[in-house]
Amino acid sequence: MRKIREKRRASIFKVFLLVIVICSILTYNKLVLQKEANAKQVEATKLQKKVDQLKEEQKELKKDSKLTKKEIEKIARDRLGMVYEDEIIFRAEDGEK
Image 1: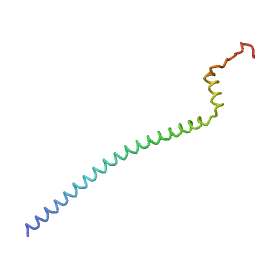
Image 2: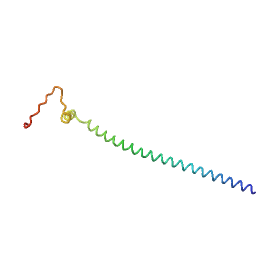
Image 3: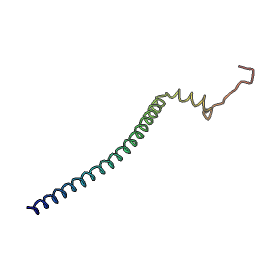
């Protein structure tokens, strides 16, 4: 009778120890996965900001691509001072209009 009780206690202790080990492993894995999830969330936030920035840049490029040939030519002349090869530019002297 006494041996049976001792075996039972030993079995219960082993099961209890096994449960503690399993719970410890699961808790550790949960912490590792939570850390990875947080890192992925930070990365996703950075990537979303980059996507938003690129979408804004795309809108600007689309806006610029809708310019007509005359508008592009005017910008080239006014801002960049570009002219055609066979074109001669006459500039007024100071005081003249």
